[in-house]
Amino acid sequence: MNKSEVLSRLKAEKVIALIRADSSASLLDCARALAAGGLTCIELTMTTPNAIECCAQVAQELPNVLLGLGTVLDGDTARQGIAAGAKFIVTPAVRPSVIAVCKELNVPILSGALTPTEAYTAHELGADIIKIFPAEFFGPAYIKSLKAPFPKLEFMPTGGVTPETVGDFLKAGAFATAAGSALVSPVALKAKDWPAITARAKQFVAAANATK
Image (cartoon, rainbow, N blue to C red; front, side, top):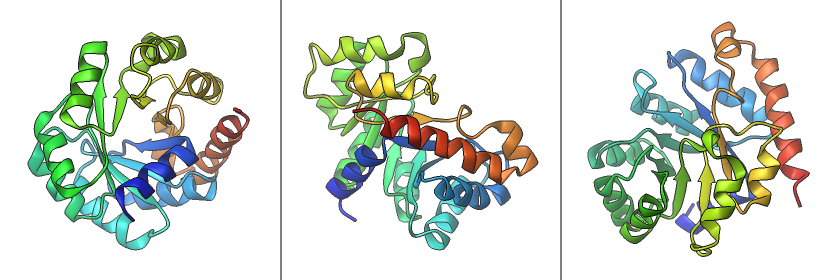
């Protein structure tokens, strides 16, 4: 899958699921539960123990999942994640070394940023998507404000994305959204309540698809 195909799929699915697990054991089951609910773009975070190994496992066992590696802070980690099967890389902040590696390997980079200066800096460095994080403090109106001076930049809000707000973020001009604990509840993850996670994924899909 090439870079433009990965970006097209992220845009079409509209919601990237963030899994912040405290063990690798439940990651595969969680990914399956999300996919059963219609969400197949999944980001594993480096805050998960053995994240690179987990990445390789999910990539191997769930080929239908479009897998990304998140909370990547340096170029070496980006390289390891891509080698393990990550199809896109996500940072929480502007990390020039990560953007450089992704450009070199032709893998989509979703660079974290918050202010207009950070957003445009990430864009100039070569980021494909600007991940506005944390988005919960300013909400959909902030995405709309950023699109005014930067109509060509693609923004992905992360934080504060729920079934109630996902449509507003998309209408404000978001390329796609990412949802963590509002989608994959830590309680459900700990209890291994996979039907609850599947049901929640379906709510997000329905809300996103209702946006025209």
